[in-house]
Length: 145
Image (cartoon, rainbow, N blue to C red; front, side, top):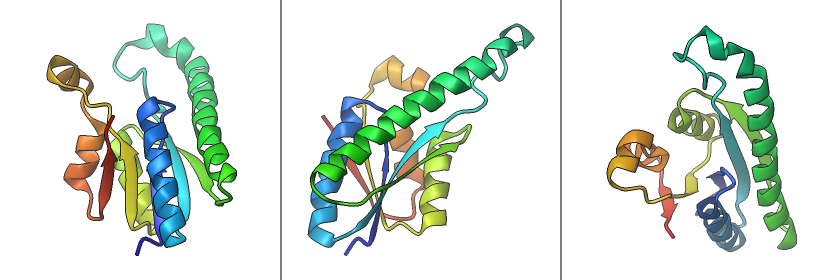
């Protein structure tokens, strides 16, 4: 049923729960699996030139964090004998980067965790999962805690 599953990861416990669910689905459907980590290359946009010196340090830290999150996904799938490809992509809008990657790779299911933010925290930080759900033209399985 699902030939290619995309799992956006961010190193959180919620992402780990999504990985666990994706493993079950990949085993059941013999699916190809890709994990993705999105790096915002423009995190300092709009905060002024005084912060531009930190751009290289930020990108280095974000890349390391992404590689660690992707390694966690690789390790989880390797334990059960399922091949997984991983990729880190850059995108100022995380949900758009996820959806563009899904489209480019021809995936037919996105499995992602939700932080379940509410109230002011959701208003300020937004919800990547909510944006993916709002704009996706393919099934999205949201794994909640």
